[in-house]
Image (tube, rainbow, N blue to C red):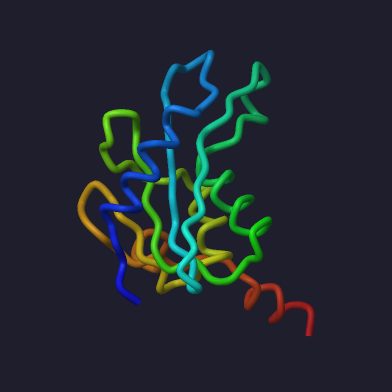
Length: 132
């Protein structure tokens, strides 16, 4: 599947304007391409209880599942200046769950596979080995 990285970037950048960031003022937008051609997106949503803040990647996954699921094939995350940024560890795990090792991730160092972004990832195969 061809990836229109500029379109993903534009959607992610537009999402930064919707971010709810009254504490950090650090706006993040994210967008992903699904295997059926849909683009899903999200923005960060802060909370006074910092532990329940939602990253933009969480919004992407929620949008993805609410719109019918499928497999993520490409992902990007940007700050409000449009610079690519890396997902945190928690969000890398979420992306792995819905995109797997071949998910393409635009990073500050270029496009990488999820396997490169999260080597030796934990997934359902680890659970199956201990429960079967």
